Amino acid sequence: MDSWNGADGWMAVTPDVSGTVLEARNLQKLFGDFPAVEDVSFDLRRGECLGLLGPNGAGKTSTIRMVYGFSPMTSGTLRIFGQDMRDHWRAIKHGIGVCQQENNLDPDLTVLQNLEIFASYFNIPHKEAARRAVDLLEFMGLEHRGGSTVTELSGGMMRRVVIARALINRPELLILDEPTTGLDPQSRHQVWDRLESLRAEGLSILLTTHYMDEAARLCDRLVIIDHGKILVQGHPADLVKEHVGRDVVEVRDPGEEIRGLVRDLGLRHEDLERRMIIYGSEEDRLFDRFTPLMCGGSCQLRTATLEDVFLVLTGRELRE
Image: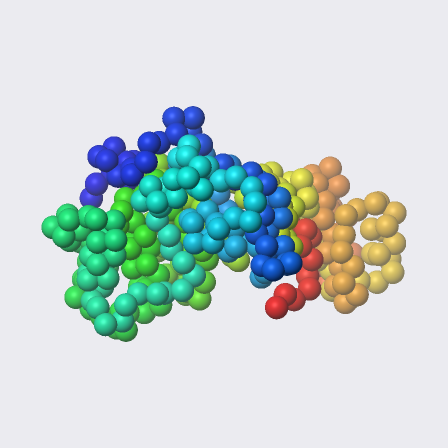
C-alpha cells in the first residue's frame, strides 16, 4: 500500500517545517467550576509517538478531545501543523485521524462500507475511497473481512477496523484514546505491530493508555497527568531511572530487621504494611543486600518498570 509519509498530498494543511506537529500551551478545560485540565503544555514532534498517562479522571481524554476539536478549550493555545486551532480547526481536522475509546462503527454496514462512508466526510471520491479502504484492511490484516458486518467481528478485529477508519484520510497526526483496552494479548500485539509500522514511516501519534507495557513499547516520550495537571514528562527509560531507579525488591510481610535496614540505608521505599517495595539505583546494590536467603524466601527481585513510576507518582488508591 501507499507510504504513510504524506508525500502524495494527504495533508489538508500546510505542514510545519520546524518538525513540530502539535504545540499545546497552558491548556485549561473547565466543566462548570471543575478544572478537568489545568495549565497543560506539551509538544509532539513529527514522526514521534507521545503517550498521555494518568489514572481514571486525570484529564487525558479531556486533553485529547481539545486537540482534535471535539471539545473547545476554556483557555490556552493549541497549534497543530503550525496553525491555530481556534482559527483553522476545519482545515486542521482534515489532517487528523481519531480512534476513540468506543467501537462506534455502524452495525448495519459491512466493514468496507464503514470505511467508504467515513471517507465521504473528507470529500474523498468514491473510487479512491474504495481503493484506500481495501488497502487499509489489508494493512490491518482484515482483507478477508471486508464483506462482514461489524457484529460478526471479534473485539480485536473491531479495534483494528476503527484504527483503519482513522487512517482513511491519510492523516499526519493519529490520535488514539486507549486503543487496546479489553483486547486479548494476541490482538494487542497485532495492533502494536501496525502502530509501530506507521510510526516508522513518519506518522505522528498521540496515545492515551492504561497499559504501561504498551506505553513503554510504543512511546518515544510520555506525559503523566493527574488531577488535570502534568506531573512529569520524558523518555520512558529516563522516567524509570529518575523516579524509581534500576532495581526493585518486593518483600512480603517484612520484619523489623528489613525495615530497619531500609531506614538505615535511606533507600526509597513504600511500606504497605503486609508488603514493602524498595527502589534502588545500581549503586544501591539491592540485589546483593536483599537476597532471598536474608528475606526467608519472601523477596522478589526484579527490574524497575514504568508501572512503578506510575504508582509512585499517582498513588495506589482506586479511582472512580
